[in-house]
Image (tube, rainbow, N blue to C red):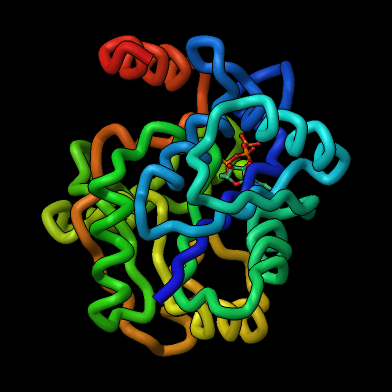
Length: 235
Ligand code: CTP
Ligand code: MG
């Protein structure tokens, strides 16, 4: 089998606040995207990494990859992204050459995922799962709410799902390539993760253990945490 990683990196990073597109922001001096690319290329199974760049930033991202040390055994490609993450992933999938049969989809915003997590996802796909997600149990209890009656009013709680059965899902998510392509051709509604599209095909998605360091850099506090993790690794 041959495995490729698609890294959607075309988002603006609105929740991180004003500045460069999130994937291009530095963590301890190195762009978040480069950390994420290295995290995928760290797996000996990953032979190709496709970066989906901001629509007007493909040449900047190409230059960035050229100017940072990356493993020799891995190929790299850059394609421009789209309006939504879903569209960016689809554009990345369209850039995959023949011969790739397993695809990882990994957020540029999760720069610190350990290689053991990446390999565990790939292995579960090799073992026959059409879709695999790394995930962790929740620390917080989750409430389902209804919209408030008026702006600023408290939101009514409608349910409390049993916490022990909930999982917070991370990336890289791993897929049988043909299954993920079919999911993108079939599913039309908005989704917040790739595996949910495979669920909508009626196929079984499975969970493997995620990792605390695979958290998503979303808000400013996440930058503080990411830089602290890197400092602990001496990177
Ligand atoms: N992404 C993308 N194309 C988009 C939107 C998002 O490739 N049109 C990517 C982001 O670059 C990121 C990943 O999808 O690596 C996860 O998205 P998220 O964390 O939401 O990043 P942003 O959309 O950039 O952040 P925000 O939602 O705060 O604007
Ligand atoms: Mg977003």
